[in-house]
Image (cartoon, rainbow, N blue to C red; front, side, top):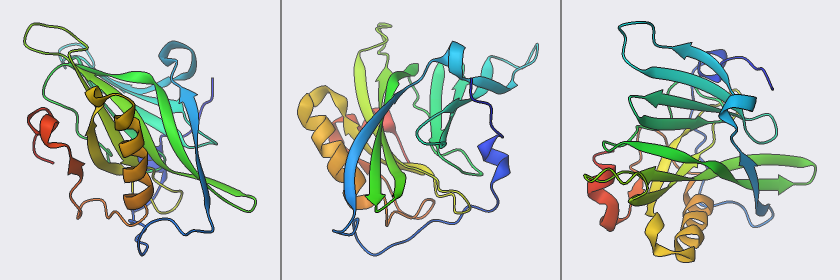
Length: 199
């Protein structure tokens, strides 16, 4: 198990890294994948006490020393990727859970390898209780050390097949660098706008 400090309190004031446009042409970009094993790899950093409902915050290893903070609350989950002082994602109204595989978009410049975005599949239940009735690909900006800036930048309808993954990667590569958390509005596919709700 990888033990690390709670990234939500260890980093100072989050400052969004605002760059002009998409990633520079000189940067090499590809994907790497990690898997969440909640029982083996994650450490509980906070949890409900008796009479406080059912919630817990867990910190898990991500890519290259970048942590993932997973928050569980009453059958719903949200996640923050990298380093941040605030939660990087609001959960959804329906009961939901995250897939255990995370796709990291990686920028390589010489010897420097940096994850700048994440694509993570979410499953949402329907009124009949089917836990996998709806799928959403959440595209998130990865918070950087001493800079923060972790937040969701887009929500892609995950039921559209392989095209959904392609669109999610394009969104990550084109918007993550310049996206200002707290100011810019995330992209939301019209087909899932009611599931996503106001952001």
